[in-house]
Length: 180
Image (cartoon, rainbow, N blue to C red; front, side, top):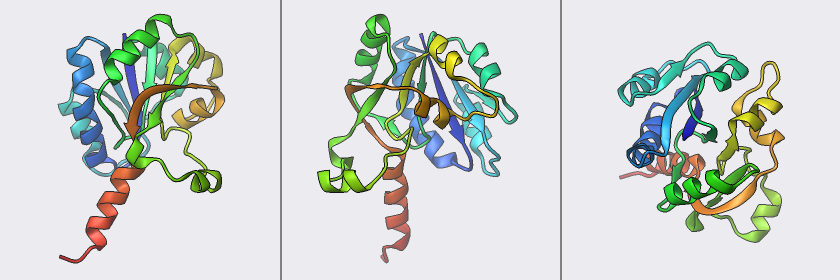
């Protein structure tokens, strides 16, 4: 079983979009619970999490949260990120046999050109992080955030692709700037 973890701060729309994609994993029996860790939201993020049946924490300590989750494996992603088709089967296979942390591949449409990859530093959770709960507990320290866990782990790359949260932010920003 898999627990999904996300940190949010005023990501109401992004959270709703990501949760809608994750429903298929719950239907297939892969996702056992979803935990949303709030970092000071003032929007409707808590309402979105509640409507989707997620656990929502306003005050949290990462070690306590990790000890309370149901899944033996964790999938940590950013609000707005969307795993693409095939993710359920690949993760189900990986958690059965894989031992080390893993992350998604960027979707083909969201991969920057090679020269730009050298200049741009990828965010620690841009491709998500799949990690065994027991491994994550070994990395936990006081005051840590989910991105710190991703930085501590040395993941392998999965074939399944993800549309990163930055793609949704860029599309939203372009629609605001573009005159109609």
